[in-house]
Length: 67
Image 1 (cartoon, rainbow, N blue to C red):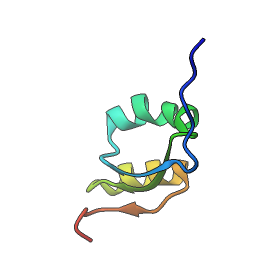
Image 2 (image 1 turned 120 degrees about the horizontal axis):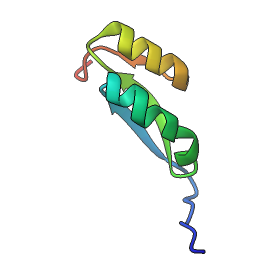
Image 3 (image 1 turned 90 degrees about the vertical axis):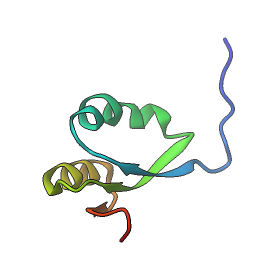
């Protein structure tokens, strides 16, 4: 079986959008993606979505990508 190479350090990713699709489809994938990428922030204009998703990932939440 082929395996993917694991980088020395995972790619740091800021997530933009934390609505339904992010919660139901993408959120469950983070554990399996950990060797390759690490979330560092969540941005969503809807406070409830951003705060909930950011708390689950242990990262800060933002409302505006420009701030």
